[in-house]
Amino acid sequence: SYNLLFLLIISRLISTIGSSKPWNILLPHKLLNSDISDRLRADPAAINSASTDYGHIVEQNPAAVLYPSSTQDIAALIKVAYNNSVPFGVAARGRGHSVRGQAMARDGVVVEMLSLKSHRDGAGVVVSGSYLSGFYADVGGEQLWIDVLNATLGHGLAPPSWTDYLHLTVGGTLSNAGISGQTFRYGPQISNVYELDVVTGKGELMTCSAYKNSDLFYAVLGGLGQFGIITRARIALEPAPKRVKWVRMLYSDFSTFTRDQEFLISINERGQKQALDFLEGSLLMDQGSPDNWRSSFFPLSDHPRIISQITRHGIIYCLEVAKYYDEHTQNTVDKDLQQLFKGLSYPSGFMFKKDVSYVEFLDRVRSGELKLESQGLWEVPHPWLNLFLPKSRISDFNEGVFKNIVLKRSITTGPVLVYPMNRNKWDDRMSAVIPDEDVFYTVGFLHSSGFDDWKAFDDQNKEILKFCDNAGIEIKQYLPHHTTKKDWIKHFGSSRWKTFSERKSQFDPKMILSPGQRIFSNN
Ligand code: FAD
Image 1 (cartoon, rainbow, N blue to C red):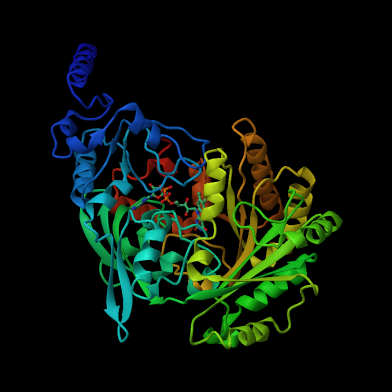
Image 2 (cartoon, rainbow, N blue to C red; image 1 turned 45 degrees about the horizontal axis):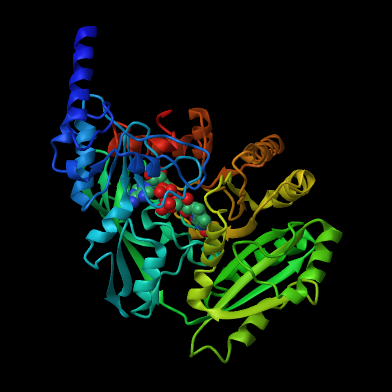
């Protein structure tokens, strides 16, 4: 049998050398002769681009990269993987903005979703509907949210729920949740989807919704790429506003800050119409400037007095809100805001306001990206940690983590976000995992580091997780990264884990999809 193996390897090598597509010998010969062979590449440029991500922490080489021209190409690839005697991994890669290798497939095939964009013949985002039945957009899974914004604005419409950064793919964020300051009111992006087209782990193209193949629909939303590759999503649209009143207030006291945040997101008590459209929060610490790469907001003339507050208190908490308006509401928006802010307790003299276009507001992170990119500071390691935690433990988290770990270590570089959301805007049937309280917080440590020192940030992340564990704070990781099955089961909780693994057996029984998540394989 050794001789047979030797012969097999030699024959593969010979076919490899004689081929213009010299992919790794681990992939089956069948691929070479398949209809999609022209769209597979294994040259160093293709392999390198798919072997790294925004995190720059994990590196895994695929055997080949598929540049699909259609959904059928993706289905054909997965069918080969599924029917091969030894199935190989297949990972959709959106923009590769994961930070721990989640869109990689070691020795398998990475599907470069962006390749579909140039084959859509202008139909990447199609708007339909009516005022009576509501509007929606049918969007390719490979489209960026900025493309969705630009296309829908042409019809005076826009999705209500966003991420802070719009240069991510629709399929990538729907595989996680898609959260931002709109989530408390409109739910995460996964709560704003009507229908999906998905290529399952068996290579079948299925349409699913809450009414049709609903198991697949709920599995895929927040499903970490485990059940199928999203090729189309039908996304809810609403009339788009024109402009935004954007306000930040600074607090030195954490409990006043969170009380005000929670008051502002309690929309049920004050009715949907009067609510804000966006609410976030962040920490200001001694990082040289109260602004950071994600947005420059504070007038330069105010920097000295803000910095002196930071020096005095160590941490200042920044509440950030927005209210949209258009020509019909431009005369009342300021009064509405005043009304909303009644009863808040931010210190006087520490409210800062801007009035910007809707697009400028939504795409606010882009200019920071371009600036960092031009300085060579974008493609660096990003040892990020994103958490959800129950409201009842947020002040323990402030004492134990913000004050006793983050402030003391003083290595934090980059934004630290902290803001609450309402659980009732999430759907429990979906795969996304959140804490079990009506209001919960998201905390994001969005570190950038040098190539030599990312481990120091990773150590801080581990210390934070350990603190939460010891203190019994039931956190859930957002964009989760776990390395053992035990930790994944803990992440989901035993009953949700049962549902998640049953759905895996149903839709991807050979464990082909998104192996870089390391949920069902240690790849
Ligand atoms: P990738 O990283 O390419 O893929 C992520 C996972 O989804 C992988 O497992 C992949 O296999 C799978 N996948 C990709 N495409 C598909 C598809 N079509 N069908 C099925 N599975 C697929 N997240 C937020 O929620 N809110 C934010 O405000 C936010 N801001 C961010 C800002 C920056 C600068 C960065 C780098 C990330 C941010 N994120 C945010 C995180 C982001 O949502 C996730 O990293 C997301 O996965 C990135 O999308 P992507 O298109 O790059 O996906």
